[in-house]
Each structure stands twice: as structure tokens, then as C-alpha cells.
Length: 412
Image 1 (cartoon, rainbow, N blue to C red):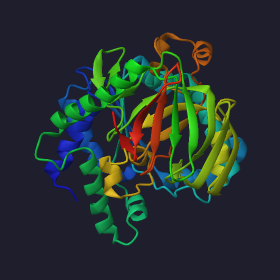
Image 2: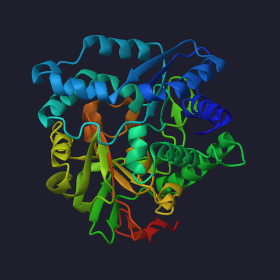
Image 3: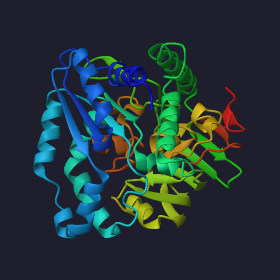
Image 4: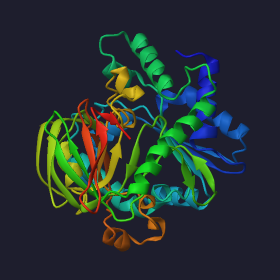
């Protein structure tokens, strides 16, 4: 277990660098019951930073699983309006959001897929119009992690429960620079600047497409939206004019594909943990942007639930470049958690795109975003396809090719 000093430093980092909480601003924390000790530290740091209030929204995988077990499909198909109104009120107050993930990757493995699909569809429909608050960066938000015993046991199955928790804590703290001699907030500023330099290089070139090829069989051409914007590192909060870190850790630079100009096949290089279910060894074949064919060795029901979420969930909303020699990749740890595993490899996202990754996108209607090649969906699900031998070539509007990645890492 980390020392009290280290845990307090992590809580401070999430408040002051993650969401960059402003004086007088409310904070919403979403977290698991098992993380209570750490969350109390976050609450204290938030008040020390000047929070007007802190609302902690507790979650518990076992209670959720019991709901899936004993509730009817009709019951699960209704999402409580008071939850929608609570979020709407928090957004109206300009709250920052800190999501602390720690879920068991296998929590809902044996849940009836029809029940899971019904609950997800009800939630997505009820909360769809609320997603613009974070997707458009109207408020600061940050996703970070704290170990749970079930998650640690999955990542380190050969260790005792206590040793597994210690190992996962050590791995998490390494990814957010809290095991370094230098101040973590300073290191995050330097890391963010490095990511933004790569993004600026790509923004200057405005490639019309990227061609991905690797040793797993991926051969995919991803068209990029016109006037796309590469992002990475810190983001800017529109309503408060302050910077924040959406993901801690992060190693990616990302942009918006043209959802209708994606062709070829992609093979996932890491398992995808989605809402308590694992999806392994899958491939997707795209034709004119749409998933036309898929194969999956494990978790097919979960994959199908993503692809059938709505009319645009079979199209891409994000393409991200992550070097194979990133610290998370070099750790050799499979985290079974997208926050970490997406930062170990290049990845794509099925579903909605970030409006801010198209020039003027924050001011566009959903119809305008679609017209510009973006995607609008109730889901946004990242999956990893980068590998040691990944080669990425940028293609400009004259057909000229520039190698961006060779042997899994940047060569620019």
C-alpha cells in the first residue's frame, strides 16, 4: 500500500492537474465503494483548492450485478429521470467531473446479455444530450484509476491479494509520474507539451488519410475529416478558460476520421474490457466506413451490443496514435482497462467523435458534424490495434506518402 504522503499527493494531482478545479467550482466524483479511503483524500484536496461543494456518487459492481440478476428487462429498460435531472443540475452549476475507475473486468461476465443491452440502451437514450458537456469540453473532466481487489487479482493472478494490490498501485503510480524524484505536476506539463508538438506537426500537414499495416494482419486506410484537428495532452475548458487533463495516464494524440472513408481490416492487439465484459481476439472489416464483417473469439455478445447500439455505432469516431515504446507498453502489463491499455497502443474508437477535433466543431449541430465527416452516436468505445511492427503512412491530397510510424513508434 502506498504511503499516506503518496496517496495525498495523488489526490492533489487529480484535483489540481487532472480536473484543475477552480475556486468556487463544484466537483462531482464518481467512484466505487472500495475506493472510499482514497476518495476522502480527494474530497479534502478539493475543498483545499476552493471547491464550493463535492458530490460523491458511489458505485458498486456487485449491487449492479444483483440488479441485472433480479430485475426484469422491462424494469431495466427505464432509466430514472431523477438521475438525469441531477446531472443536468450539476452541469448547469458548472461542475468539474472526476471519474475514478476500479471496476472488475469480469464483473458482468455471466449477466444476461439482453438485460445488459436493455439497461445500456435506456441509459444512452436518457443521457444522450448530456454528453456534450464533456465531449465539447464545456466543463473540466478527468478519468483516473485506483486499484480494487478484483481488478488487481485479474491483472496479477499469480500473486496474493495483498501483493496484487501493491503491484497494481505501483503500476498506476508509475504511469502518472508519482514515483519520480521530480515534481509530478511539472512532469505532466512537460509530457503534455511533448504530445502537443507531435499533434502540431500533424495539424500542419493535414493528411487526407492514414494507412495502417502491421504483423497481425491489419491493413486499414482511415480517411481523415476535412479540417480535422489533432489533439493530445491537456485540453482547454471552454466555459472556464482553463486547462485540464482528461485522462491520467495518457500517451495518445488523436483526431476525427471521416466516418465514410475507412476501408480494410483491423485486428485488435489487446483484449477490450467493456462494461464488465471482456472481448478478445477480434477483427473488424470496414467498407466505406461501416463495419461490414466481424470475427470474435470471446465476448461476441458484448461486441455485437456495441455495433448495434445505434445507426452510427458501426462507424469510427476517433483514431489515435500511441508509440509502442510508451511507458505503459514497456511495462508489459495488460491492465484489462481501456484507460491504460489504450495508452499502450494505437487505437480506434467505434461511435461518436469529439466535436473539438474538427475545426469549429464545438459550434456545429449533430447534422453539421455528420456533414463534415464526424460521427454522432450514443457510444464511444476505444479498442487497441497497435503493435511492435506497426507502420503508419500519411497520405496527402496529391497522393504523396510520408511515413509517420515505423516499427511501432514515431519517426517524425
